[in-house]
Amino acid sequence: MAANDKRATADAFSEKLNATPAGGDEADRFRAADDRLKALSAAAISTIRGLSGADAEQDLPPEIVEALTCWCFLHDEQPASVASCAKLAEDPDDFRLVGMSSLEYMPEEELTEISQRVGVLDPEVARKRSVAVAEVACAMIEWLQAALALRRWAQEQRAEQAESS
Image (cartoon, rainbow, N blue to C red; front, side, top):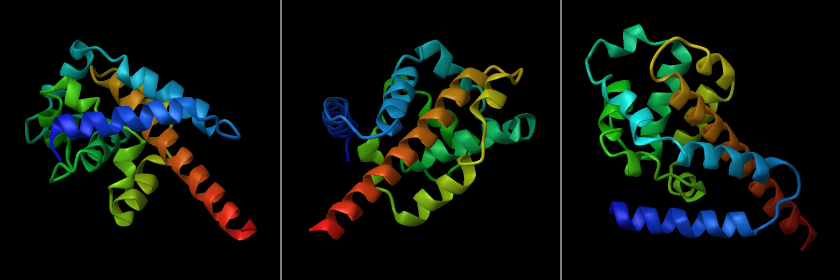
């Protein structure tokens, strides 16, 4: 899918999501995480570009490596790695071009892998790390966790509706 098509799809879905109230805190949590991610400056995202070297991963805390690697899955960037994420960060607009629709196009195996990798992470641990990418990685972890939680909630709602029909 072309970048402009992805952007239009993500924007349309985000607008629909923002206009659709959800029971519980999942939608609010996602909206807040999405707003934080979209508010990241190009300069903040550019801190990731410096991680393109083969040994960059060795110098990063594990939760930041996980966040950067998982971000590649959202963009279908292979191989999923810190270096691949650095490549994605060359275009800050495309880097931020994720939405709930991004998850809908992903294979279930990748969603499971992302969930296992970031589900146990604490974004605040990432934020407190003394590396240039800490703030961006924190926003990425928050976004991934919130998006996965909202997806689970939506699946549960659909299952409940199907049972009651």
